[in-house]
Image (cartoon, rainbow over all chains, first blue to last red; front, side, top):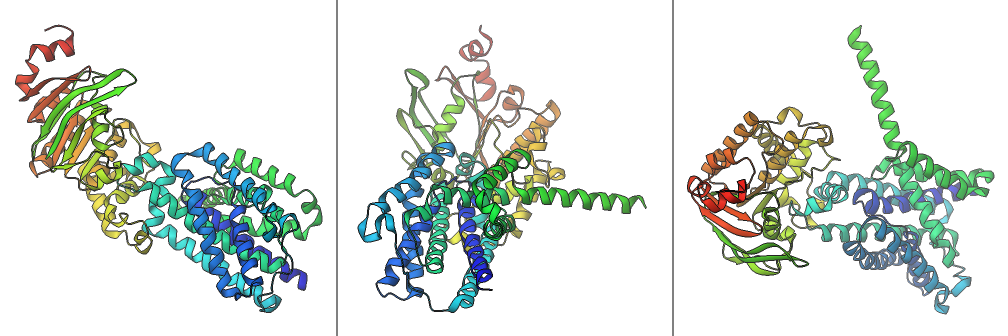
Length: 289
Length: 245
């Protein structure tokens, strides 16, 4: 039972991580290949603060704040470069993070930080806490999509030059997407640190960034339910089935290629198209009858 | 209300606009014409701020627009329908116009998070689509529509911003003569209701019919200005268009 609880907690954290990238990539159309770095900033912040005696519930918002602040700084690069150039810039952020943390003794260097304090909720309590936050972020994501901020994100993602000519402060909206997305990435990172109780620079390396990216792209960029479904499946399956974990990168890479070739808008779009097709066929049969 | 003052745009030694000045009077429908490559669109981009002039200034309602970001110029009251159409293809026609109609709700980035109601903007957008006669495709994606429809969508979207000054770059392109005439009549009606319009257009029949005044540019230079029929009889303008006077 303990293993299942641990799996479900990791699943909840993955959902938060994937939804946080979805705000930047899915909602606002800004590619980020270094998202795990922001989980890392949150994880290290919360780990350091709680080890210094700061309560977990204060360390959590502090982790979000620092990740969000650094996210805004990285977001400034999105104002100067776009598309593939932004992808390369954010990839650089990922390497910068691991390279920098690895050399800092006060952050544990290569060895990382061990014995991160337990929040004190018990295993089930912590799982429910993570689930609560994942549900809250899901509702917040759905709300953003309904709001005028989400509507504006859509225009920036679609064509930012045209959005500008409709009076949109494109820079402001991009920075807001980075601030929100990276702050929630910080939250996911902090939860990860207190769940696993050990972190090192490699926990938040480039491969982790691609893992989160896979969840968003495979689920369907911008689709909240698609991203959640992909995060659930892709986080739990490798842990449940050992053979998937052994070939994790191969499976993720294969899925990414398959989705890009067969349904670039993600599996959620495929499901919607299939549903519409079946629904229209049934409707046609009903009308004919 | 709009003053273009000695604008020069130099693209690496090529003068796309050469020391052009003119002013736009309140409630006017001004035609900005000239042969292909004359510099009209560049001048339009100088007004919206997407092209920085090498020298000169643009002011709207006596406030200097130089140095102002394009989105702030739009917020200051300029609406534009571009020559090369750029609809948001991820949205329906109605959503494209609804978004523009809600420009006051997207003014402040943070506060836009707390606004969700789109009912009023949707209604405004539907009225505008009716005005430009494309309400039948309100729920279609623009990528499925012919150019003439998208041109009218661009016009509706620009009008949804409720601009003080509407810049239209070839809105009649892609329309047949009867469609062009109908849309021209719509523009004329809008102008009679008080809408300020600068119209860049190659359809000279419609330009001469509906504009009160013309500014003509060729090779980046202003070569004529005044009442349409007088300007079109100007030998310099005729030479620019026909190659002979």
